[in-house]
Structures are given as C-alpha cells and as structure tokens.
Length: 344
Image (cartoon, rainbow, N blue to C red; front, side):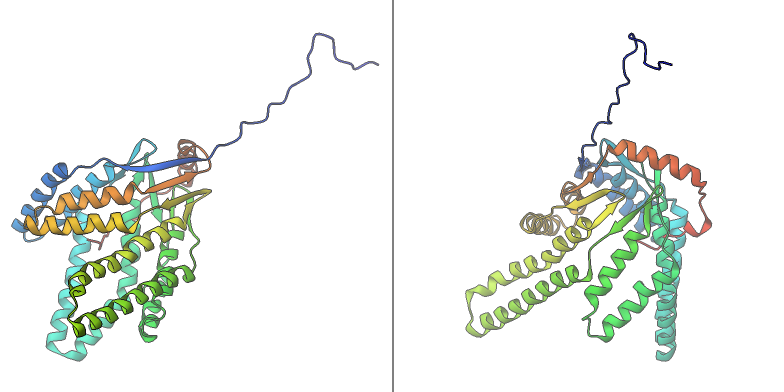
C-alpha cells in the first residue's frame, strides 16, 4: 500500500519562534519642584496645626505624588497605603519612645529594661512595616509583597547588629549585607521573588575605602592645623566628598546585585554629579530658610531614578501579564498583619 502524500499537499513547514531580544527599560521621573512645593507646604502647615496628627495623611499625599510620577516602560507606580494604618504605626512608635524616656528618667535600670524590650519588639515591627509598604505598592495593577519571616528578622535586625557592636563594628559591613539580602530575597512582584547576589566582601570593599579616606582626612586636618595651611579651607569640601562616596557606591552595589526572575536592575550614579546636587541643594536650602527643601527633594529623586534601569530578557508587559495570572491563581488576600507602618 502506498502512503505517499498526494502531489497537491505540501510538506509541513516548522517555523522556529523569534528569538527574544533583551530590552533595557530606564526609570523616568516626571515630578516638578513647583508641583511638589504645593503639596509640601500644605502638608507642613496642617501637620503643625494638628500637632503631628496630619503627618500620616501628609505621607500618603507625598507617596502618591512620587509613585505616580515614577515611570517604567510607559507605566507608573501606585501607592495604596491608608492614613489610619500609618497613624497607628506612628502612635505605636511614639508610645514606645515616650515609655523609654519616662522609664529612663524614673530609674536607670528601668530604662535599660525598657530599651531591651524595644530591641526585642523592633524586628517584629520592622517586618510588619515592610509588609505594609510593599503590599501597598503596585505597578500596572499588580502589587508587591514581602514574605520575610520573624526568625530571619531577629537575626538580621537584632543579632547581627549586636555582634557588630561587640566586634567594634568590624562586622558592620556583613550586617548591612545580610539586611539587604533578607529584604530583597523576601520581596516579590506578583509570584516572582527578587534576588540579591552581592556578598559581604563587596560591602567590606566600600566600607574599607571609606575608612581609608576618613583616616587620610584626619591626617590632613592634623597637618593643616599644625602648619596653619590654607588647605584648611578646602577640607570641608573634601569631607562632603567622602560622605557622598557611600551614598553613591552602596546604592549602585545594591541595585546592580538585584534581580527579579531573569531580569536585572542596575544603577549608574556617579560621585561628582551627586556631590554637585547635594552641595547646591544645601546652599539653596540655607539661602531660602528651608523653602527650597521640596525642590531639593525633587532634584535628588530625579537624579537617582533616572540613573536606574531594568535589563529585561523579554517584553516587560508580557512578564507583568504572566505575574498577574500566576498571582490571581494564588488567591491572596490582605491580612490584618499588613495594617501597620512605623516608617516615617
């Protein structure tokens, strides 16, 4: 029997899928100083008039503005936090602080006991605050989440700092690395977790360079004072440069070591531009008796965000759509444990 195909039927043609081209999506910030000034001045006045109670509503207005003006691939972020939850968190923080102050004034031993109580409860509160912050942040309608457990929190927020202090802060870079690793690896967007690859050695490299610069500055100060050198007048600027160094290098390290799924973040801040913005912002704030603060905030925020990007291995819209479907299948619901925020 002949199974040869008829002459009018062509063999099937298999078309391989088009190769996925990596995409680089830069963050954009569209806020302006004049717009934010209106929000800032109203927030300030109402917070003063209400003896601080309005600060929770002020934070929501501020977060709404910054989230909605932060864009990635043509879409902006959204903030969903409620003022009452923030006010509750601040009342808790205020009560703890007042209790510590009163206890210390009544009896030093009581103050020490209250300080220990604060240390014990603080990691638990930090976890709830991180959950609140991420749960109330979204991108293209899909929320972030924080799944860090209390056991890990007590290790990175309590035990590691204690060990760092006991070693005269020789373990401080390690403690910092562990905090960022815990935060990032416990965070997710939809159903996909963030990753963090920086080791403690990378943190030690930055901190040791900072320590070396501070020691060199101390020697220069001593020499300049001893010799009454005119170089003394340039030392404050050198000090500012040294302080800017970790403010640039650490965020670059952290974000360049962070990914989500197959996608990677990167940050390209540079010291001299950051230094210029910092110095000019400070001078403008002093000259305007503080009224330049919202403009300074916008300038710095724009610089930081516009030097960040996401290197994606596929179309970002497809990735978000996939996360929306996967997360919807999880049937997640908001828990009351999210309902607290102790961050300012």
